[in-house]
Image 1 (tube, rainbow, N blue to C red):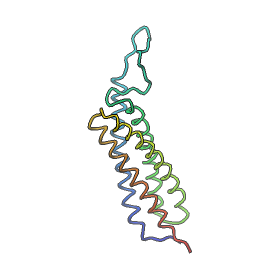
Image 2: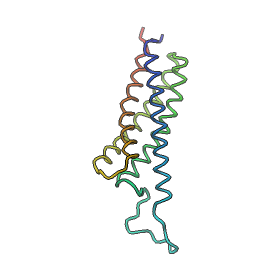
Image 3: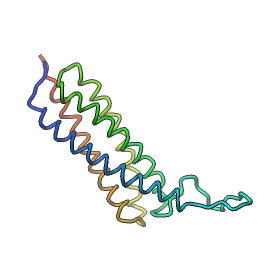
Image 4: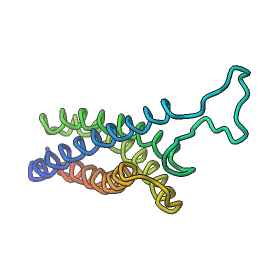
Length: 159
């Protein structure tokens, strides 16, 4: 038996999280594209620069590469978990809840990891407005994703 009182709350959080994950993917994609286009250029002798890092980003600080990489991973997994959650909200049965809850929990843990790198990037200061926006979205997403997990678990009634 499933409690339907939490269904509107879960639906609202699901749509909010999906939109925020798409925005994170857009900004993260921009940052990754900029890093690829404006990163290190290796000369004809193929000598690496002295301070070469495979995760080098021309904007931001030392944490930017890790932050953007994990933000993209969290965004993709988060958007996929929202699609799985859409099926659960549509059906809203006890049988569909474990799949939606486990996908949302995996997305939440990856979002927490990316939010941790966002906090490190905030601590190191030097970053542009788009990175600050992505940091804010990931920190907010870490809370709203947890609320979504609580909402779908709150829909499971115990007999």
